[in-house]
Amino acid sequence: MRVILVTGKGGVGKTTVAAATAVAAADRGHRVLVSSTDPAHSLADAVGVPLGDVESEIFPLLSGQQIDTQSQLDRHWGSIRDQIMQVFDWGGVTGIEAEEFLVFPGMDELFALLEVDRQARSGDYDVIVVDCAPTAETLRLLSLPEVLSWYFERVMPAERRLMKAARPLLTRLTDLPIAEDNVYQAAQSVFEGVEKVKALLADPQTTSARLVVNPEKMVIDEARRTFTYLALFGYGVDSVVINRVLPDAVSDPYFDRWRSIQKGHLDTIDSGFADVPRLRLRLFDDEMVGVEKLRLMADELYGSKDPITGFTAKSPFKVTEKAGEIVMEMKVPFVERGDVDVFRHGSELFLQVGPYRRSFVLPDTLRRRQVTRAKLEKGVLRVSFGAAPARKRAKK
Ligand SMILES: Nc1ncnc2c1ncn2[C@@H]1O[C@H](COP(=O)(O)OP(=O)(O)O)[C@@H](O)[C@H]1O
Ligand SMILES: [Mg+2]
Image 1 (cartoon, rainbow, N blue to C red):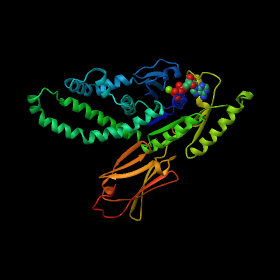
Image 2: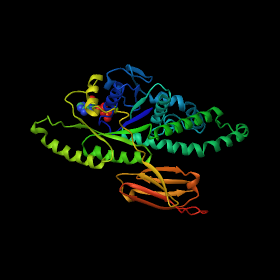
Image 3: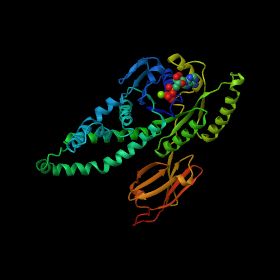
Image 4: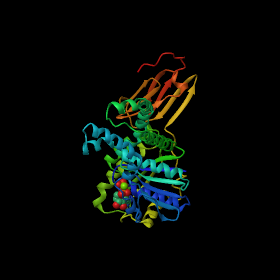
């Protein structure tokens, strides 16, 4: 089972590349689902077949689905939302104001990922190609499982215990709407779902990201940031697809300047992403819509290579032990020392890169050790845990 997350800035060709990849994978005999989590659906247009929230066949071996994020949200979050609404109502907060509190940014995509997870576990497919929302959204969403599980792990069980004990008393004393057990159950099941999605997506054997770029400055800058943040959250990138490259056949002098600009950017991409396979795709002279056109694109993109088994990402993490010292090694390319912060708080290690923060709950073996060093060198961050039988906690 493989999951390929196709991501990149808006308009670079994510949907087209996702669809072409899915077609090529199905042509090689894999059972494939191509699934769009981007609320701005254009997957159906790309494949030239109507698609809905429930998967439908594009051709034997290939199915497609445009996940309706709103209905996923209602399904999973409905009872929780109703409860919070009641409390708001009680407090005099109503309408749009209250609604806005209830749906946090990136939440709809989180629920779309629950659906991807369900499909991945259904046993119906060998490959799921996910046509993701543009970069920033995806990143927010990737950090969400961390944030949410942090919240649920710490707050929910305690709150639930408290509420169980206090409910009889509270309902007698006030008319404050108290959450019924089913609300906690819904929250619990969202939490468990998120944990499963996390496990699915963070396993580099199963999931890898395919980054689509164009030879344009702003697109490349954003792709580098995405690359870094993907590493931070533990997602491996299996390849970079460079889309819309001017073909050599274009000889019109009008494009000379464009060609030299693209050449500069192509060099930047080649050196910046030297560790991952880079695939080029030319700018076609036609609208690349429908299965036949996508097949043509996939041929140029992958040639004789299998678009799935031919590509695996390496895990951005490594843990090694040397002379009693344990070193956590992590690739964080494209960052300067000043952008990275490592600190420890109790049993958690926090890694901050730019605006993104990830917390690692340390296993027992590391919990008892102190962080002795954190060093960033050539895009690799090494956090060393000393052998000291540390009784005291490491300083922040
Ligand atoms: N290599 C290409 N040559 C020609 N047209 C392309 C190419 N790649 C993408 N397109 C077209 O560009 C438009 C945007 O592509 P799309 O895949 O929808 O981008 P995204 O999903 O990243 O927003 C579509 O009309 C698509 O057919
Ligand atoms: Mg798209």
